[in-house]
Length: 397
Image (cartoon, rainbow, N blue to C red; front, side, top):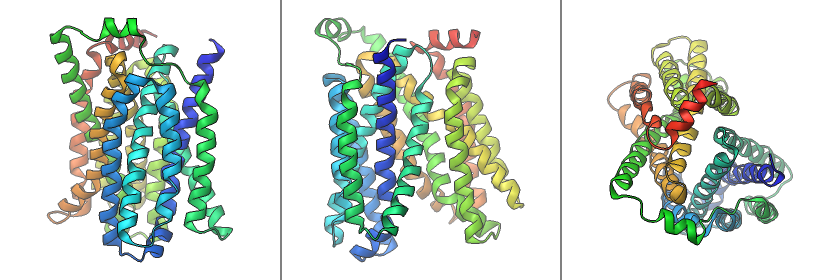
């Protein structure tokens, strides 16, 4: 394996960590920013919607741009912009300014998210073996780093503005230093002439497949978003656990998801992406069903652990399939799948919250079981199109 490809993979890891750290840095400073601006939890919740709106718009903008200009240009540029924008939410002293800061930061973060995933698809193609899940695992590592650094800066007495600006400045330097190792993924003029006009029927099949992958991403990421916001509340409100114990429900879910993503590439290489998606979603369905039905706290912990482990390998397979469906439009296709998935991530907590007006919280989780079962049944979509060869070859080993 040549040195440049290995360097490109390392650089991709760096950008995933950078993206996770940027988002994590904002998350750990939310309480301090809320106090500084002087807003209620309800107002903050409304402002956070703007973060999601900005991210969604950024994803849709960055995908086609990455295909046109190449990841070597777009990924470092969005890495610099995302790092610079990280300082913005720490500055406002009124809700309107904070709203604008979150919109800009969300946009830049969404741009980086899609462009680095599009580049990860090209790295995976060059490696000719699954590597996508490990990239997503390092995004989670970035969140852990952000929590550690955030705790250290708070202990040192730094204000949110100073702490976030410091991390942003460090991110700019890292984004620029890592740029040279990225692959030149923009199609050459000759390649573009060959790939611009595929047959109309093939374009329709590819487009239909991308939207099916996006629908599955919405379901899986809705489940993930619901776990993020409701796992701790489930143990506290349904099982009567103390708040300090209930917090470990989300920690258990997040830990098994990270571990699963570190292991998922080996499973994909051994069994193929379709099996990884199918049995992962089935495992998640079992886990959340245990959570729904259990009256015992330790069984609930086991259920959340299974839920995280099962979901861990699902999203990377969907992103990878979208990127490989058409190498010349990897960025645009990933942006569709990631964008709709992000809608699911944002909608998950709200959907479960709405259901709690009708049924108990644990019974509302039955929706998550249903979505996981649908995903498992529909996993055969990964056998269609260009990924079929990779799936068959992988399953023989």
